Length: 130
Image (tube, rainbow, N blue to C red; front, side):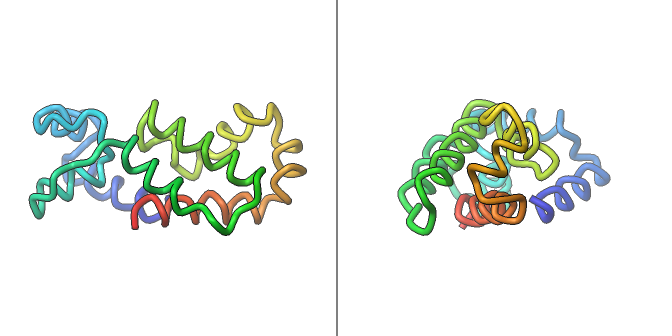
Protein backbone atom coordinates (compact mmCIF):
# COMPACT_ATOMS: atom_id res chain seq x y z
CA UNK A 1 0.00 0.00 0.00
CA UNK A 2 2.83 2.43 0.76
CA UNK A 3 4.56 2.07 -2.62
CA UNK A 4 1.22 2.27 -4.45
CA UNK A 5 0.36 5.48 -2.59
CA UNK A 6 3.78 6.95 -3.39
CA UNK A 7 3.37 6.01 -7.04
CA UNK A 8 -0.13 7.49 -7.25
CA UNK A 9 1.02 10.67 -5.50
CA UNK A 10 3.86 10.97 -8.04
CA UNK A 11 1.68 10.44 -11.11
CA UNK A 12 -0.86 12.89 -9.66
CA UNK A 13 1.90 15.51 -9.35
CA UNK A 14 2.67 14.83 -13.01
CA UNK A 15 -0.95 15.60 -13.97
CA UNK A 16 -2.49 12.12 -13.81
CA UNK A 17 -5.10 12.87 -11.16
CA UNK A 18 -7.76 10.39 -10.08
CA UNK A 19 -10.13 11.83 -12.68
CA UNK A 20 -7.57 11.41 -15.46
CA UNK A 21 -6.84 7.83 -14.38
CA UNK A 22 -10.57 7.02 -14.34
CA UNK A 23 -10.88 8.49 -17.85
CA UNK A 24 -7.99 6.27 -18.99
CA UNK A 25 -9.77 3.24 -17.52
CA UNK A 26 -12.93 4.10 -19.42
CA UNK A 27 -11.01 4.85 -22.61
CA UNK A 28 -9.50 1.35 -22.72
CA UNK A 29 -12.74 -0.25 -21.45
CA UNK A 30 -11.15 -1.38 -18.19
CA UNK A 31 -13.57 0.16 -15.67
CA UNK A 32 -13.62 -3.07 -13.68
CA UNK A 33 -9.82 -3.43 -13.73
CA UNK A 34 -7.21 -2.29 -11.26
CA UNK A 35 -5.05 0.72 -12.12
CA UNK A 36 -2.10 -1.67 -12.09
CA UNK A 37 -3.64 -3.39 -15.11
CA UNK A 38 -4.42 -0.08 -16.81
CA UNK A 39 -0.77 0.97 -16.52
CA UNK A 40 0.44 -2.46 -17.66
CA UNK A 41 -1.76 -2.12 -20.74
CA UNK A 42 -0.61 1.42 -21.51
CA UNK A 43 3.08 0.70 -20.96
CA UNK A 44 3.60 -2.83 -22.26
CA UNK A 45 0.33 -3.79 -23.92
CA UNK A 46 -0.78 -6.48 -21.45
CA UNK A 47 -4.54 -7.02 -21.67
CA UNK A 48 -6.21 -5.82 -18.44
CA UNK A 49 -7.91 -8.37 -16.21
CA UNK A 50 -10.85 -7.54 -13.99
CA UNK A 51 -10.51 -6.94 -10.26
CA UNK A 52 -12.71 -10.02 -9.81
CA UNK A 53 -10.28 -12.19 -11.76
CA UNK A 54 -7.28 -10.73 -9.89
CA UNK A 55 -9.02 -11.34 -6.54
CA UNK A 56 -9.98 -14.92 -7.46
CA UNK A 57 -6.37 -15.74 -8.35
CA UNK A 58 -5.32 -14.31 -4.99
CA UNK A 59 -7.89 -16.38 -3.08
CA UNK A 60 -6.62 -19.56 -4.75
CA UNK A 61 -3.21 -19.02 -3.19
CA UNK A 62 -4.28 -18.53 0.42
CA UNK A 63 -2.45 -21.25 2.32
CA UNK A 64 -0.59 -19.66 5.23
CA UNK A 65 -3.59 -18.13 6.97
CA UNK A 66 -6.10 -19.43 9.48
CA UNK A 67 -9.88 -19.37 8.98
CA UNK A 68 -10.37 -15.96 10.63
CA UNK A 69 -7.61 -14.41 8.56
CA UNK A 70 -8.97 -15.97 5.38
CA UNK A 71 -12.40 -14.58 6.22
CA UNK A 72 -10.97 -11.06 6.58
CA UNK A 73 -8.95 -11.38 3.37
CA UNK A 74 -12.03 -12.48 1.45
CA UNK A 75 -13.95 -9.52 2.89
CA UNK A 76 -11.19 -7.07 1.90
CA UNK A 77 -11.07 -8.56 -1.60
CA UNK A 78 -14.84 -8.22 -1.91
CA UNK A 79 -14.56 -4.53 -1.03
CA UNK A 80 -11.75 -4.19 -3.58
CA UNK A 81 -13.84 -5.86 -6.30
CA UNK A 82 -16.88 -3.69 -5.59
CA UNK A 83 -15.22 -0.34 -4.85
CA UNK A 84 -11.80 -0.38 -6.50
CA UNK A 85 -8.15 -0.14 -5.55
CA UNK A 86 -8.68 2.65 -3.00
CA UNK A 87 -10.20 0.09 -0.63
CA UNK A 88 -6.71 -1.35 -0.18
CA UNK A 89 -5.08 1.93 0.83
CA UNK A 90 -3.27 1.69 4.16
CA UNK A 91 -5.33 4.51 5.65
CA UNK A 92 -8.49 2.60 4.72
CA UNK A 93 -7.61 -0.41 6.90
CA UNK A 94 -9.42 0.89 10.03
CA UNK A 95 -12.57 1.43 7.95
CA UNK A 96 -12.41 -2.14 6.63
CA UNK A 97 -11.90 -3.52 10.13
CA UNK A 98 -14.84 -1.52 11.48
CA UNK A 99 -17.07 -2.63 8.60
CA UNK A 100 -16.18 -6.28 9.12
CA UNK A 101 -15.90 -6.50 12.92
CA UNK A 102 -17.79 -3.39 14.08
CA UNK A 103 -14.78 -2.33 16.19
CA UNK A 104 -11.01 -2.28 15.99
CA UNK A 105 -10.82 -3.98 19.40
CA UNK A 106 -12.87 -6.93 18.14
CA UNK A 107 -10.74 -7.13 14.99
CA UNK A 108 -7.54 -7.17 17.07
CA UNK A 109 -8.93 -9.97 19.22
CA UNK A 110 -10.09 -12.10 16.28
CA UNK A 111 -7.01 -11.49 14.11
CA UNK A 112 -4.32 -11.70 16.83
CA UNK A 113 -3.39 -8.04 17.19
CA UNK A 114 -2.39 -4.99 15.20
CA UNK A 115 0.92 -6.31 13.87
CA UNK A 116 -0.70 -9.48 12.56
CA UNK A 117 -3.51 -7.47 10.94
CA UNK A 118 -1.00 -5.23 9.17
CA UNK A 119 1.00 -8.26 8.01
CA UNK A 120 -2.14 -9.93 6.63
CA UNK A 121 -3.16 -6.71 4.85
CA UNK A 122 0.27 -6.07 3.33
CA UNK A 123 0.80 -9.73 2.36
CA UNK A 124 -2.62 -9.75 0.68
CA UNK A 125 -1.50 -6.93 -1.56
CA UNK A 126 1.82 -8.52 -2.37
CA UNK A 127 -0.08 -11.62 -3.47
CA UNK A 128 -2.71 -9.56 -5.34
CA UNK A 129 -0.09 -7.83 -7.46
CA UNK A 130 2.41 -10.68 -7.92
